[in-house]
Length: 267
Image 1 (cartoon, one colour):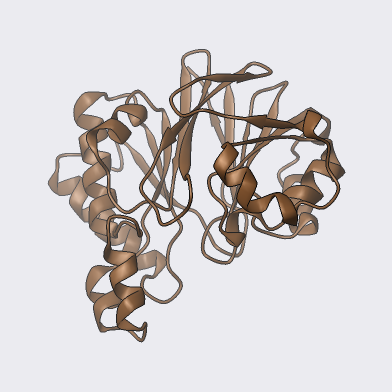
Image 2 (cartoon, rainbow, N blue to C red):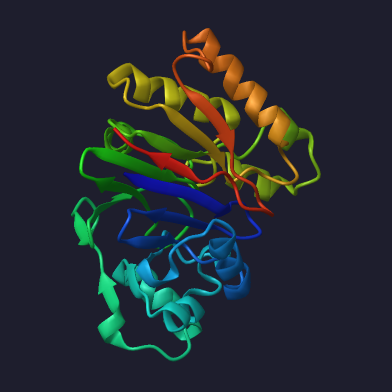
């Protein structure tokens, strides 16, 4: 069995919870330590089982309270060396014994969960996304990416649950208030993917494997999207591609300001 819950997702802060019955992992730490602790208590997470904090990249909405969480819960920090060099000065007091440098495409065992980092395209120093495996069960979390190449797609195959970025509606972004340079950054291959690309990616994953039963739309833009628009756009494209939300796959949202559903995935 493997558990997943989005504690928050968006430009205001990101933190995801992945766990087995004996091992708890946090992915990113872009909110206050108090918010994260309260959110974990809200879902009745076993705080004594928390062992690791994995970081995707150095932007503040992903690392804000990394040092605080390391100290509060005694967590080991798993991070690429280049990203660590970017955030080290912001960690506060820490011990190098509690820092593990990860390498892309190389599995890491944390308790009974195996974690695989893999490269993504984003305007950060050395960004990664992660897949988490417990026996035959797999949860993948991929946000903050500008496009979805085949090598990234291969890391998503056989996932039971994927949290995938559904950042913006293209027309809403183009006609919105953002400066031109920022719009171009978001639309670039190092920016964020749209609702449409998110849906197309899900269809591509399902074309390789029908194990994918749950999709959570994450990192929705506050200004260039709405939860309703993201959900309906993705739903429509999935149904056009032959997937039923009643029979084939469930579709859900991660929220920027509140805890999402706690998923319990089992064979």
